[in-house]
Image (cartoon, rainbow, N blue to C red; front, side, top):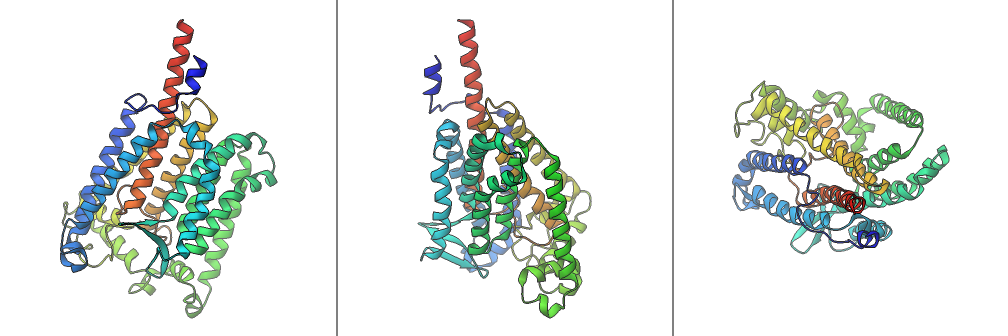
Length: 398
């Protein structure tokens, strides 16, 4: 029986498909479709670039999401131990994805080269890199986690994630994705490490460093700050009205949208800010449109849905049969949580603009596909953990 368990590599079917997780994911995706259409129909219908099709963004998002659901089910049916055997290959693939940005396949938009054209679709290279790094760090921490005791060992274990994060930052000029990759890896290590106080010290050091940078930028001459768009974004965050027609315009319009929504909102489809005031209301700032149209009630519903989704992922991590399964699910948990928190902080004006999207709500085909594949990893862990317990119960009964 033990040999049979080890050889069970593929297992497609309803076993282990956490119903609560799938239900909340379904509601989040449907809610996201509704809000993408509401936020985009005006711009899409008025622009010949989108064929004057008011459903342009909705149709593309639905198609990509369906592809993502199929990919999720395929990943869920594969034993996660088999997936992690290729963690090293996946890590090398991260360099391959970054290298694509130096080829004719690379696409430059908004003065940044972050996408590649693969057939009929555009893929932001950071999206597959995120899931590959979760698999790699889960495998690495499972093998080496018990040896992480000193500051030096913590730094060594973070070097692979640091290398990829720096490449994503420097090559694709995508600092927000680099922070998410590094933050996800750090949180995974936090779960493994026995001495939590070291992470508290690390957070304090990072906090002091960030505060020092903000103070330095605030004291700079505006002309000097304008030489760096990141410094200018920080100054726009500190004094948005000084940059209300420039770097702070989208942030201010987003805040106006949130403030005008009140408790119940203006009604679905009745946003004013999406009518040209927020440049791409269906992307990073879609949460502000939710607040304007559905009010505090709609915003609270979105937050509650994410809390329940993360709770289900965390619960599965706690019932995983081994450290590898736990690390995979914690990696997915930390990635989604970090991205949601950063997006909400930016939209509400508590953090400088970063370009981080709201998972399953913001428009983005490749992001949706790879996020759903991450959910597939969680379902795989749950499926094979349940199967192992069932096999052990049968053996005990025999």
